[in-house]
Image (tube, rainbow, N blue to C red):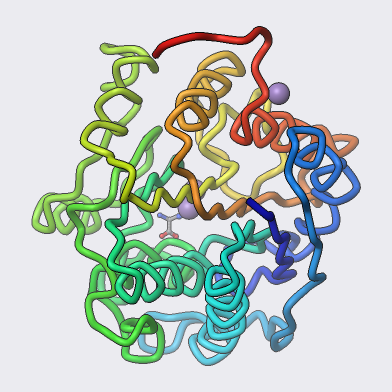
Length: 304
Ligand code: DIR
Ligand code: MN
Ligand code: MN
Ligand code: MN
């Protein structure tokens, strides 16, 4: 498999400025060479372009909807092109609103190729807000809802069909911050959420076994990795920290179990915010975890 890095330097959907510096911080932390060292060919196609962040208050419950749509279209086009060429796209965000463009492209590709889709959403947040439920108007809190058909026309149905994905294909892991209205909609849509309480009670191994159950060779596995998934003690470089996330070892196990499936075909790395980081350590941690996601393990392991 060839890997393509796609930068999307924007914080258009976020509540703090600075995620626009994420792609370069990941490159500086050595992302390309680290994936290459796992035996892959890596191409960095540089950054997609989009409008500046006007930093305005919400209109009709959305901040910067027009600009958010433009960034997502650029991401959608780039991700879809790489999938069509048979490559594995790695989206370097940028904030998590870009999951709309990325995953709608994956959904479009899977539909055309007759492949099943499983989306792993690693995040502190459910990202299932709508313009009426959101406390902030920030679209990085809305991508999962938009992909499931709860959103404005500009950023729903980008795959050519609404909803872009069936909520049943999503597994959310690490969730510990859900707004009150958002919580109702999560239950109504029937999202499968492995929240931090589930992780505390069952452990990361049983959680990942459940989240990765019923995959087959025909499944396209997409991983959407919001860096705020990680505990802020180890990953301070994000705009919206929530205490009580997975530890370093738990996160490593999560990534290694995904790698063991051999089914990951696309990846988002989002919400890294160098303005909040300490000597780029969160970027370095993200790269270390991505190394495991692409198959690095301490020793050769047999069986499952
Ligand atoms: C919050 C924060 N639920 C919102 N969401 C974040 O603004 O909708 N998502 N930070 O990653
Ligand atoms: Mn998120
Ligand atoms: Mn988050
Ligand atoms: Mn590693």
